[in-house]
Length: 106
Length: 128
Image (cartoon, rainbow over all chains, first blue to last red; front, side, top):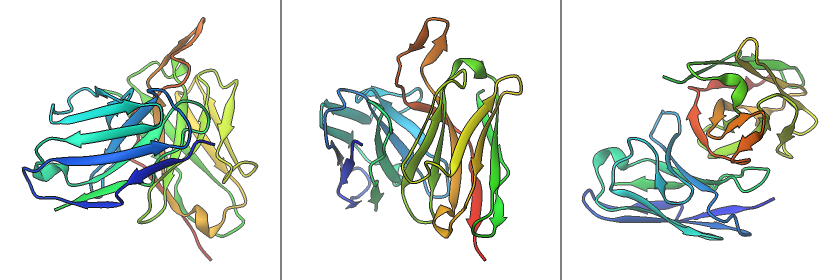
C-alpha cells in the first residue's frame, strides 16, 4: 500500500498571501495524483487531477505540480472561501489512499 | 448535472449490519467505476472500496476487507455497500464517488482514475 503524507497538518496564513501545501508518496505514483478541497460541513470536491490539471470551474489561483513522489498545491492569493481542508489522493494502483489532510486556517 | 444520493445510514448496534445505497443519475452509470470513502467525526478521508463498471472486480481497504461488500445494480443505477459486523470505529459519514475514467467494451480509459463527483454522504453511527 502506498502511504500518502501531507505537510503541514495546519497552515496559518492571511488573506491575500500565498499558501504552499505538500504531499509525498511512499513510492512513485507518476502523475496519478488528485487534490480535493473540503470546506467546513461540506462534501469534498475535486480541485486538481493528474497532479497539475485544474478541475472544471477551479480558479486559476490554484495550481498543482510534481510527479513521482513529491507534489505541491499552491494557492497564489488566498481568498476567504479557500480556508478549508485539502487532501491529496493517489490513483496509481489499489488502494487509492488519501493523505491525512492539511487544514488551511486564517 | 451528475447526482449521487446516499441513503440507508442510521444508528446501529455493534456487531449488527447495515446496507447503504447510492442512487446515481444524469450519467451513464454502467460505464463508470464507483467508490466508497468514509470520514470519521473530525477525521480525514479514508478510501474504502471500489467496484468496476460491470461489477466484475472489487477491491477493499484492509480495514473493511471481509466485513464490507460493495455491489451494484446497473439496471437500477444504484451502488451498494453492505456493512457487517459493525464496530464503533466504523462510525463515520460514508460517501460514494464516481470515477472519471470511461469504461466500455475495450476496457477503461484510463484504467485508474480520480473521483470527479461525490455524494452528499450518509451518517452511520455504531453505538450501544
